[in-house]
Amino acid sequence: MITWMQRHRKYLVITIWVSTIAFIGAGFVGWGQYDYGDKAGAVAKVGSVTITAEELQKSYGNLFNQYNQLFQGKLDEQKAKEFGLQRQALKMLTDQALVLNLAASYGLQVSDDELLSLIKSQSSFVKDGVFNKQLYTDILRQNHLNTKEYETSMRRELLIQKTLYLFAPTISPMEKSTVAYAMGVADKVEYKQLTTDSVSIVPDEVALKAYWEKNKAQFKKPASYELSLVRSPIVATLSDSDAEKEALRRYIDFKKGSLPATITIEKMSLTADSTTFSPELIKEIAGLSSTKPFLKPRKVRNDYVIIKLNKANPSSSKTYEEAKAEAMVGYSAEMKKSKLQELAQNSYKSFHGTISDFITNKENTSLAGLPAAESAEFISKLFTSKEKQGFFTLKSGNVMLYTILEQKLLQDPNIADENTVMKLKGNVLNQKLLKMLESKYPVEIYAKGI
Image (tube, rainbow, N blue to C red; front, side, top):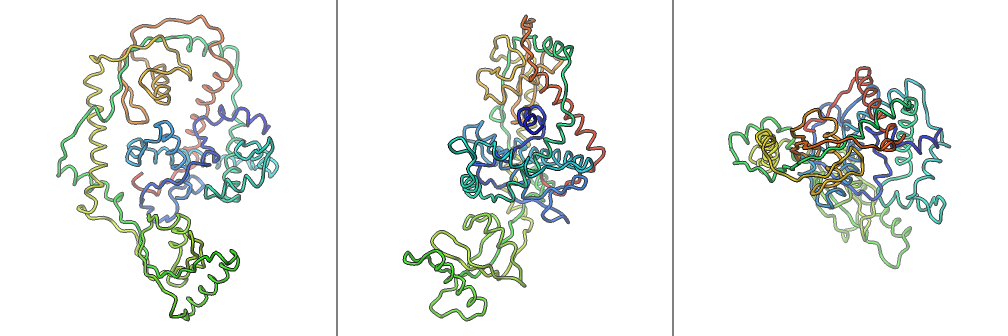
C-alpha cells in the first residue's frame, strides 16, 4: 500500500500536501510579530490538533521559497504579504490538521518500517544509489533540523497520505470520456495582465490612520532582552573538548559570581528578531527567566558564549508615529488592490491584449508574457468559467482580463489519461472531504493579523 501511495501521492493530496522534504535547502524566513492572545505559542487549534507558531513558521518558509523560485529570487516580504502567503500557509496546516483528526478517529498509525521506507526513498539522502545515514543527518543539521523533528514531521505527513488513501478515487470509462470531451475544447483567447504597477494612489493621512487603528495589533515592537555575556575564546592549540571544558568552568564561576577580574562581562541588548545570534539561540534566550537566568556555553563562531538574562521586555504595540512607515506599506497594498479591482471592472470589456493560439486545459500549456504558475492558474480558471468575457484575480494578486475569441473541439482520444482524470476527481473529493471535516472538527484561530 505504501508503494502505491508514494507512486500516486500527487493525485491523493492535491490541496493540502506540503512535504517536509521541501524544507531542505529552503533556509529560514521570518514573518514578523503576531498576537497569539491567551494561547501563547499556538496559532490555531483544529479539533484535538494544536498548530504551533513553529509549524506555521516552517510552512510559511516553505511556501515563501516555492514562490521565490517562481519569481527567480525576487520575492520580498512585502510582496509575500500582498500574496497572502501567511494565510495560505495557515490554511494548509488547518487542512492537514482536519485529516489528522480523522486519522485519529479511525485509529490509523504509521509504523517505523513505513517511515523508514519513505525516508530511504528520498533522493536527497541517497549516495551512490543507496540511502546514506551520515548524509541524512548532515543535510538535516545544515538546515537546522534534527532527526527527531524531521521524522515526526514525515510520520505526520505519511499519516495524512494513509488517511486520504482510504478515499482514493476510482475512474469509470464514462468519467474518462466525459473529462476527455471537456478537455477537448480549445479556446483562442485575448488576455491582458494588470499588476499593482498599473495603478497609483495618493496617500491620505486620515485614511492611513484609520487603517492603522483597524490593524494596529499587527504593528508590534519585538520582545527585547538585556543580557550579560561572557566569552570563552576557542584557542587553536586546544581541542574542542578542552575548549568546551574551559567554557563550562567560566559558566560555573559566572553563576557563582566568582569570575576572575581579568574576564570581561559584556552588556548587550537584543530583540527577538535580531540577527546577532542564530534563531535557535534567540529562542533559547527567550526561554530564560528571572529564576533560571543563565544559559550554558553555546558555540558562536570563534567563541563559546555564556549568557545571563538581566531583564526581558515583552512585545508591545507601536504608537501611530512609530508604526506609520510600516502601516503605509500595508495601506498602500490594500488601496492598490482595491484600485486594481476597480480598473479591471472598468476595462475588461474594452481592453486590447495578447491573442493566444488555441489552448486546452493542460498542465503544460503556457501563455506568452506570463510566469508558468500564473499561466497555469489563469488557464485553469478560464476553463471553469461560464463567461465569454471577464477577469480573474490570481493568487499573486495580479488580475487577468480575458475575452474568448473562438472555440473548437479537438479529436484527440488520449487528451485525458487516467492520471489526469484521477487528479481532477481527487481534487473534488478532497475539497468535499475537507468541507465535511470542517463541520465536524471546530477550527479555532488564535493568531491575529494573518
